[in-house]
Length: 124
Image (cartoon, rainbow, N blue to C red):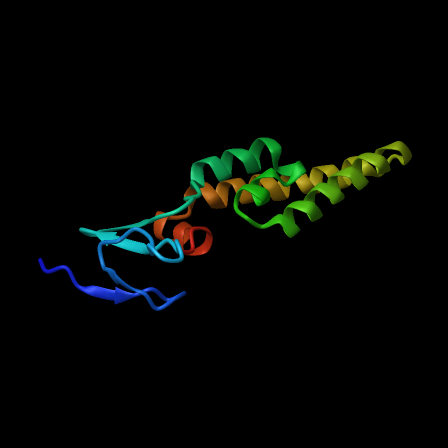
């Protein structure tokens, strides 16, 4: 197997294809080993995302973990508003909707295959 030279997509520095990141700008590279694809940098784990969605989904923690802060903020805001609406009696309905939504998300994260999850959340 020969070691080929590639260019960093960010700064155009020539780098070995086996490099994990660019020595000049530090950009992490996606590397393939054997038949599996691995992603360098901060990898997100689908099991962690699923557990966070299941137990802390109402607070949007799973969205923050996956790097989707806007969605996390919206989920947190919706939960706070629903809790406040409990004072007038209709908040429990909205909390139930949020809970069901997060249960579905947790199941989706857990049954998603690794390649789909990595393509969506572990972009290089």
